[in-house]
Length: 132
Image 1 (spheres, helix red, strand yellow):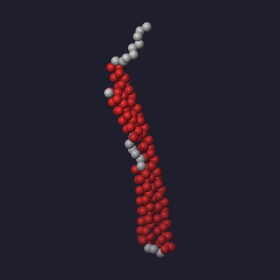
Image 2: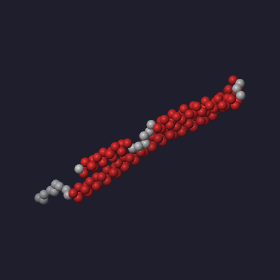
Image 3: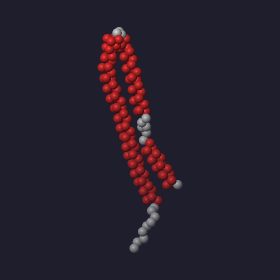
Image 4: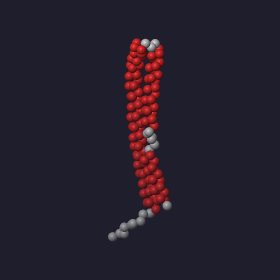
């Protein structure tokens, strides 16, 4: 019965190490793509929500502006130009508050692939330990 060779040559070890590192890099790239895709989806949903909310608010505001201008003109007796200025200022302030809230929500998203960065750091430490 032939003896089973237990030890591998240095060339075999480096070859195996090279294959393992290639596989590891491919997995890290796959993880980074997945993580970036998840973050892009989250940003997309929030941007869509902000845009849709802004558009609907705009449509409603147009109707309300006309109604309030008419109300102030006919009921209160203000001149139409003054009614328009007062209502326009109120709408501008409301729109500004909504815009700030939407932008604040967008700033809470961290676009960096943090998990991938951490695993790459772990991989580099592991590779350095193997070389030592």
